[in-house]
Image 1 (cartoon, rainbow, N blue to C red):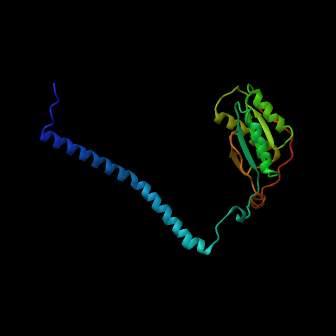
Image 2: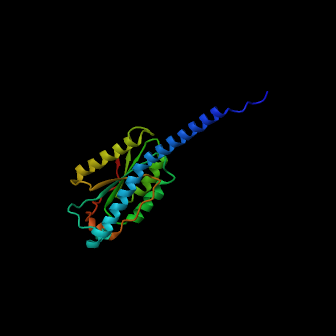
Image 3: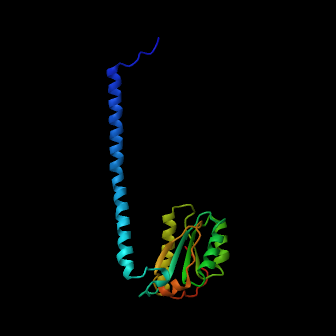
Length: 203
């Protein structure tokens, strides 16, 4: 039994339907791309304005050219850690080498059933007062939010005890590699010296 060829009317109908579908798709894509085009136009328009008008009268702002901060302070770095013994020691060592004597304190959150991570952090924290190992009272894993809340409470307890406030909180993962803070930038930020404290564990 052979296949009957389409009649002229049916073929014309299918061609018309195909044309309408393509037209609908093209119009939809065009409408969907208008917002992207608008963003691009705004970006290039603003860039041209700044290049021609703003930077013609003012120098570009760079890190070394930052104005003096009116409020000195130091940085709290939060590092939630669960089974990070393979990487966290290298990360902390790199952070210490990169940031040098910059006033910061790293709060590392660990769990009582993760002895390997605790040992890896403790080996460094015992010799560096800028690192605080905070052990959750619940076995892990919980959630990153729970671990960050632990670090927040430890930071607030230190602020109350020492009588100062941290300038900022930086969230950091154990797998990340930190960036060097240049001395000139630290001077411009007027970050205050870090008080000397011994290694401690916050529950």
